[in-house]
Length: 260
Image (cartoon, rainbow, N blue to C red; front, side, top):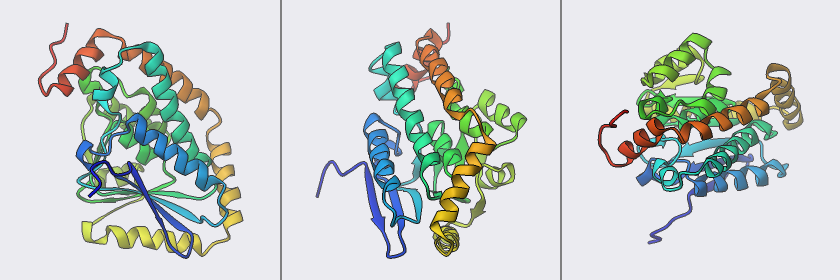
């Protein structure tokens, strides 16, 4: 058995429905540099594949995605490293938006911080009622600046701000009510609900959906890339703050932070 499986697995069916599965369950599918690179590579490749009709983003294990890999981040306390990391993540998120086919998040467990951002960035999302969502960086002294870009484009401003300043979780039904996900369904209906969307999408002309998706984002949000650049810079500076460094260190060491 492979002791180091691929961080991302891919499958597709005859209709051109591609499933990308985050495959690091032991680390709660954190967006490590390796995971970000694997997602970027897959999205870039699929963008040029005219046979692809829809992409489902799924995850293995109990968590959908726990956000950035904090152990990896704290090991390299450098502003330049953090700027590069958040820029890498922002490029991947924008690649989802630029993909000419819809991307559906299949959320079976927790989605926190950049993992919640990943759900928000997908065009559609279906969540199991077992799933929960938070932008929890503030609990460790790191305001979720880059996740806020996608979150605010899905969730009303005051509800987004409440999530960002409290770090509190919301459940799948609350996520659906707020617009973070399209549907919250019982765990045994998750795949069927995703399939319902997939079947509807592949029944439509690919070119119409591709043109419509591009127009949708152009007319709805005229500054996402610039917002990500600013948010990434903010997070890079924030990561050098003593409170954030202590909070993240405490998290990785499984202890309560000692604020100064």
